[in-house]
Amino acid sequence: MTIIGIDLGTTNSAVSVWKDGRSLLIPNALGDRLTPSVVGLDDNGDILVGRIARERLLTHPLLTTSAFKRHMGTPREIRLGDRRFRAEELSALVLRALKADAESYLGETVTEAVISVPAYFNDTQRKATRMAGELAGLKVERLLNEPTAAAIAYGLHQQKPETQFLVFDLGGGTFDVSILELFDGVMEVKAVAGDNYLGGEDFTDAIVDYYLSSFGLSVSSIERKTLAALREQAEAGKRDLTKHKPFKLSALIDGERKEREIGRERFEALVQPLVDRLRRPIERALLDASIDGDAIDEIVMVGGASRMPVVYGMLSRMFGRLPAAHIDPDETVAVGAGVQAGMKERSEELQDVVMTDVCPYTLGTEVAMAYATGEYESGHFSPIIDRNTFVPVSRVKRFSTVNEDQKKIVVKIYQGENRLAANNLLLGELEVEFPPETSGIRDIDIRYTYDINGILEVEVKTEGLDDVHRIVIEENPGVMSREEIERRLAKLSALKMHPREQERNRLLLARGDRLYEERLGDEREWIGLAMQRFEAALHRQDKREIDEEAERLEQFLNQFEGNRR
Image (cartoon, rainbow, N blue to C red; front, top):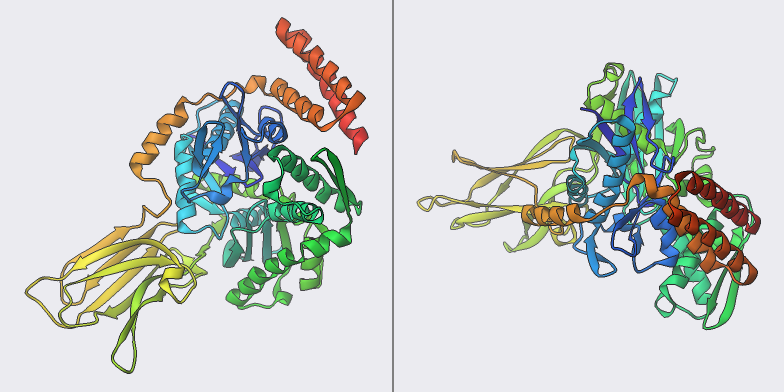
């Protein structure tokens, strides 16, 4: 059975497969290798995923959503019409679409996938990603850190036998940086760092916020359609700035047309706080890897947001040289996920490739600290496995009970970097009771074992006693229970997704609707007439005529948009 690789991104997603000795990106029904991570409902309540849904962000903002990856592993629900979805469910719908594309391409059923995740995703977010795969009908044993996936794709084409490089992964919603070393056929991750709430979306928000504040407005004071239109203009404007072209944001608000022009200097000033946030994880990764920036042989750019000149310039100044530009930043992670899928299938071409990875967060437990007065203060965090430790790893640490009459302990398992336990993420807890006939201060050995798939096992053993208590961390706050998964799986299974063969026509209709709403006067009339002609062909149900009219409408819309830019 073929295993597929999936890059489940905030902005775009992609699916790949190891075939004929290389990782191939699988096109979707529209022939695109990237599928927008956008989900919506049509007027009948059926599911739309990808470019069609993205076109409807402007025209149907209450029925469409994007950037939901940022809420993975949280209880937050996103409303589409009269329905509510968790981020895992929305991600599952994207995965279902990618799975269908892979099955159409391969001509066989697909049941297993390797899915990439941001390196700095915590345990809860990783489990939520696995659940999204399960909701989509996929077995997901292997989660692959996105920078590691990029490193695999990069490393297979690297000619030097020994090299150290930094992977800079700035996606739509998350930022990761990894430092890796390729030595004698072994790809070794040295350190990872990042920010789960920093990405290209924040740069877009900065533009929109500037526009609104310049007129004394706020996000809550304008209609959702207007906000969606402004965000679309801001996204296009970021691309224009790569060509040193200023752009305008324009919207009709309270009957008045309001415009603001933004040039490169203004944009760079607006996003400087975000650029400063990018520097800190880079500096921490270098420190954790115990290397200087001069020791980095090459900088690999990943993620569409990494194309921004302000980001490119920051890295060039920081390292004194230009980052690598010969790898497509939008596709690199998906290529690496396909390679990892081939490794999992034990493909002969990949038998000589060896990968190592690290634990991205520190794992530890809550303890009480003793003061010279003999008093204890609880709530302190005691690390057991430090961040950026090579995995798989097993570490044990000895603790003692606080008083002789203690009848039990509660081992609280945390993930994070703060010295106070409450400021870290609680993963679970394990209660250990002592035999009632015994007493005295007890020595307790707590062992943490963390594997390459991100599964943590905690073992507690009391010195002098034979019993050993274990827990495998499976349930976290914000993560669905098994009963909840089954319930939501049944609900998702009942939702209809539009047939792949209809996607081109539906995309043209959605695109035409968006342009009609954007334009005024004669332009709007021309678009309306073109749409009516296409809809009439659809109504007559003659496939040859529909194909001809679809081609005519697509050329018209392409020309129309091209002339307006």
